[in-house]
Length: 277
Image (cartoon, rainbow, N blue to C red):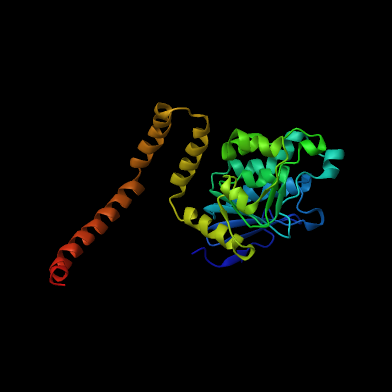
């Protein structure tokens, strides 16, 4: 269970652009600046990166959900900030970069269009849960802009080269159900279930051993550059040895041995009854 929702009023990371609340061990970051459809303005970028940093500093949450208020998840880069930049281009990546580099498992709850750089926010998460009304569009080339912020890399990781080309070069628009079929999203659920589904998945990860989860997430990302089974075995060997040397592993084994012992005893006790049936 994710536990009751607790709103953190005035906590670090709260602003006119982003809301933070906690549901048990899950932190929910909600993009909430509907006048510009949650666009990634410089203000939104700073608020999002600040919220993620504050959540990690508090060490209260074991997983993170990124959601949005209103019918649009994120409309992409702010036109005003593109015309009159308020920060270097690479600084505008700080919001989704903070999500991608977080040690926490992350889930995006996409309830509407995620456009251009707005897709980067969702793609930075480990899982994307979306609704049938969600829509994913690259749009960079439509405005004469080369994709940035790891957009092409993320797309290719999830959809392969052909899928990335279809979206980035050929302007394919992918709806919620199609996004799941093509590997862009993990699950498509109805509007009234998207946040609860995302929180429930996040709560499962949040309830696990946090250092182990963080190390597993890091190895998962490192594996993107591995080619072939020998390199994959080598990559995972050191962290697996690390996990086996921890007291948490020994404790889990003791519990497993105890459960197996009860199971075997129960099987012997029930055998005569079973044979008599």
